[in-house]
Image 1: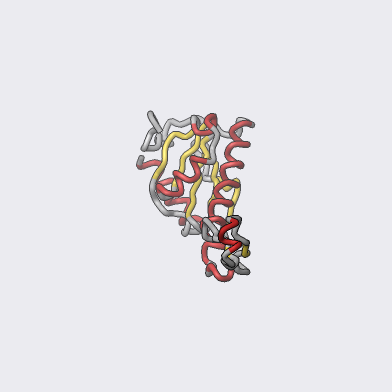
Image 2 (image 1 turned 90 degrees about the vertical axis):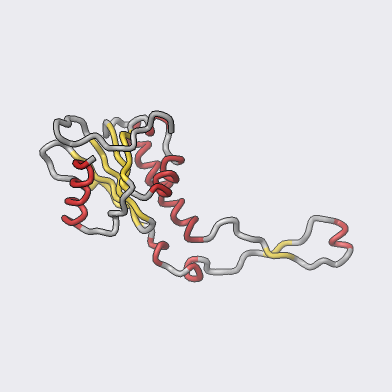
Length: 167
């Protein structure tokens, strides 16, 4: 995106309401940060399919259909299997990312934050950005390509604060 900042504005001297969205393939967490306050968790968006086998997610085989071509029907061409354009894990991830995008779009429309930061790998950041409205994207002040979502509790919070303050 033209004019998009790659670095995050430091928290010091900061007086706005900033949200931080941390994510990986298995979950997304949205935090709120005010100056001189600890990070406050606003929402979790888990993706349980991230650690499942594809066979456990896709419970049955794709359906079968008949050819629409008259010549093939006349020649006795058998039915064919429908193919899935997307594997179940990718579909589950996109569903979670879409939910996170809707959450951010709604919050932006309700003026619940002034700006936000993405902390996730570039691929996920790109997928999330495609699910955000233009008005929401205008509130994005930067993104940090770090995978921190696997951390828990105070470890996660301290790493987020360190990353944001260093950029």
